[in-house]
Length: 79
Image 1 (cartoon, rainbow, N blue to C red):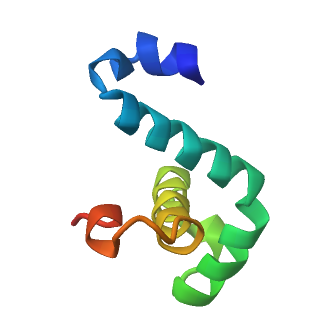
Image 2 (cartoon, one colour):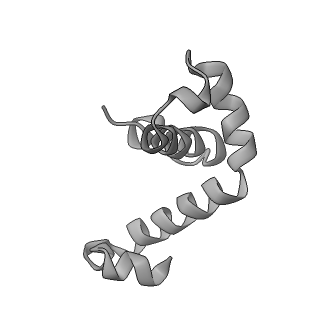
Image 3 (tube, rainbow, N blue to C red):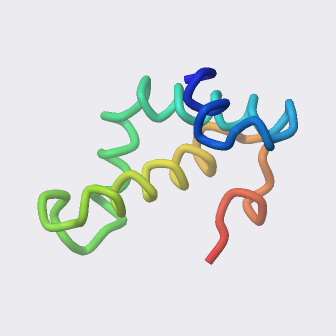
């Protein structure tokens, strides 16, 4: 993940933003089933009828709101 962040433009991230991106990525991987269970109750369509990229974005937002209590909600969700 570290290598991907550096190669994919992550070098422009501050150390704290890079740390947040890594923590968020690992949280989504570790807690995927939990996040999917939460999202299934919040999304009107079944998961298989939601574009995979959109479902991933929903997982990222849910992880920020649910698994990172120190992160203010206004910093977690943006349009």
